Length: 470
Image 1 (cartoon, rainbow, N blue to C red):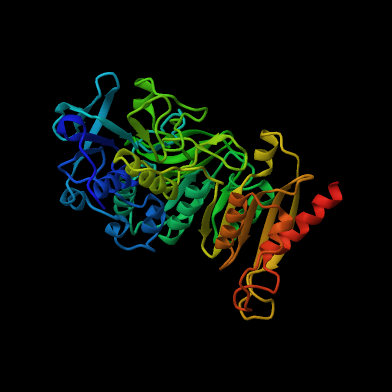
Image 2: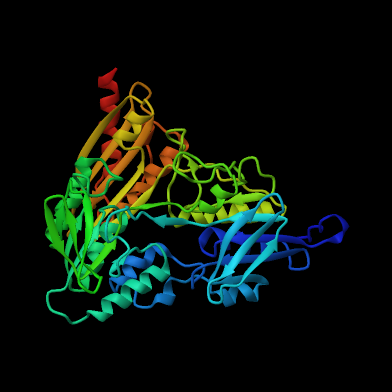
């Protein structure tokens, strides 16, 4: 590939990246591959102790399935620096001066503050865990699990009470992180209580599918407390968390883990006057350039993206999206070209051997955007019924009335169930109808699927519902 030209007058361009994880460092790395250090100076700031790591792997590290913390790190700060990226760790950007084209950063070790100028800026500040304003929420012993630093702090706390009889943990919030952390703590020998304000766990699913997850948690031995708002964290004489209080009950705990969800970390962007959406995330165009800003891009958990099914912006915090954003941004800031068209909202998780997946819209999502729809729910198995080890699977499908356009799919089942959602995600991205979905030529062999794959069985049922609805 031929070298790209410098800016006018031969001046080397300055790229500043705020945030040293998936989106930020993917952008920096991609830009470096396209432009060498003689053409592009890259400075990146990260307030934590780790760069380019898998936050999604934290529950599996805490639970012991991943033995080594470093296995979650894709590229260390030293490796980035070897590629001529000046990555400054434990350094927090505290201000963006858009008019002057500079950022102010504070070294968290020394307190020293400096200004760094930029020609192009990438904002990849991620998301922050939701911490409701209740008494005791900031007490020692209350842990979020958003960053690798958070995971290390939790593990350090668990090691302090390792070996103690009757160890108890309370997890607040029953979304993906909450249920994964409940399993992780069970594996470490804790008695776990999972407290959530909704009636069923996994609010990313419809309640009827969430009920299947609750059944699996019950079988695992997790005590699930639903429909309960946490009103406070109970503390002992030493100020440490000792339990969780809801309106009419208290649940003792040696450790409290928050799995309530996250919000875009956009305080810097807001203060700089950059455009934010209804969820508080930065708004960008298809090139991931911040709307109305010629030299600022943003990606990862701090942005809102287009939902290709509903046509509206939404906030989805996933490493898959963040890495794609970074690749697009890196190409564009280095003078190339890339776009990120949007998402369909695909996610997959597991509780022990139960796999949980969804893509597209839930019923309440369809209602919120005014779509009329039909649903179809089927019971099937993950392999031919006669094949040893065949296990149950439930598939729920939403389709638009009259048109039959596929709107969403949810799957709960055993081994081999979760990744079937990728077929549905592909169909959603292509705008297929459930009738078209029934004709897909999917792979078949008894160890992997019945003759009719469960996704196709659900599509047939949904197509019939569309015809019956008229």
